[in-house]
Structures are given as structure tokens and as C-alpha cells.
Image 1 (tube, rainbow, N blue to C red):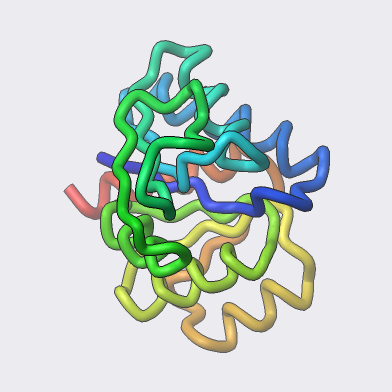
Image 2: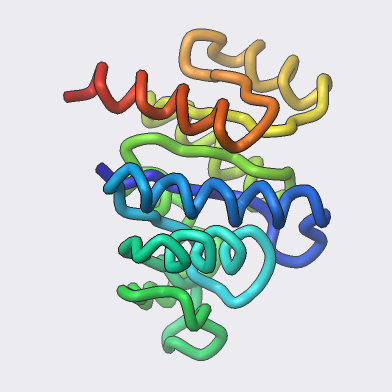
Length: 162
């Protein structure tokens, strides 16, 4: 199973980074593959670093046409040359999408996940973000207040997909 952890690169808040690290670590401990946007910043870097701290396998879907800017914690770098359009690859290649923090790219990934009927877990989201995404499709949006709760919900979702 591939668990996609999506979140802001630039502008990620300290609580997003610590949560992303813990999410990555827990993804690896559960034997899942971590998928991120692969860059050496923000939630992508923190989640990949967390997964590597638990000897996990990490995949990074990069926006550019080279591996420049790729996180050192990514095992498999996939170069797309697609810019932000690579967000669709992030979503379609993930069995479950966990959004940790919010940025414009993250919002697009959540929207693409909803369109693709992928389960989405929002971690530490604002009330307005929760209300907005649940208004679009309440059945695919799950809310978590911390990394462990998100992983517990991911386990239920993964089991239902198997």
C-alpha cells in the first residue's frame, strides 16, 4: 500500500512539520510505502525523513525535469517535468491521501483525490477547511487531530481496500 502524505512545502507551519515526520515514521512502521511530492522542503521533506528514520521506503514525485531539489530522504525519485500537474500522479498513485497542513498545492491534491474517489484524511485542519471539503463529499473525508489518529484511520481504510 502507498500512503500519500501531502502538505505545504514553503510556508509549512512547525506543527505541520512535526506531524508530517511522525506520519512518515508511522507509515514506515506499518510496512507501507510513503509517497510525497519529493522535494527537500516542508511536509514532503519531514514525512520522508520520518519514514527513513523507521527504515521505510519513500517515493517522491518531482515536478521538474531533474532530481535537483529532491529530498535526500527519497529512495525512488520520479521526475515528471509536469510542474503542479504532477499532483494528479501523487493522488492517483496513493491508496490513501493524508493532508497535513494546507497550501494551494495541498488543496489541489485533496480536490483531485475527491474526484478520483480516493479516501482523504485531514490532519489538524481548520474548521473552515473541514467544512469546505466535507461539503464536497462527506463520505471520503476523515478528520484526525494528530498523526497516530490519522494512521489508525488509514489502517481501517487500507483494510477496507484489501
